[in-house]
Image (cartoon, rainbow, N blue to C red; front, side, top):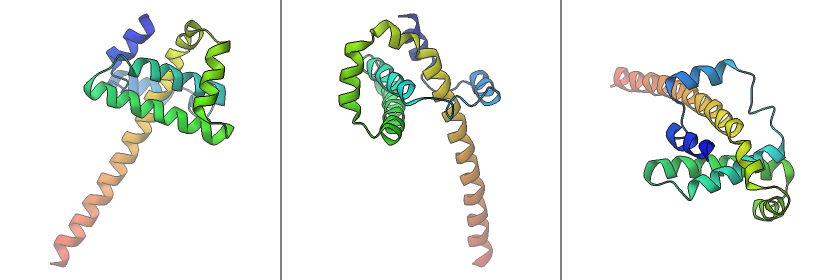
Length: 134
């Protein structure tokens, strides 16, 4: 239960302190197995049922991210895999992985912010080129 509260409190997006930690640690995104992606997708699906508003949008984005990662690597439908996995694993086992899931999502958020910064720079260059061409 405390992991779910932690996930909600973090808003599933990196606070400035957590973003620095996520960017300096080993790459949790690349080191993950399809089974870990499945656990994270299920975890965020569970959290999504308790979230509202912008937090729910963040949870849905996280769940979609992990579902996509799982399905691309495993070539197995998420719904089928989740149903089978939930028969074998307890919710406590899945929730126990939540810290790793949150860390992985934070690391991905840092990467998205870096992409956004790069695109802002490109947009500035385009805007400058447009204004000098007028």
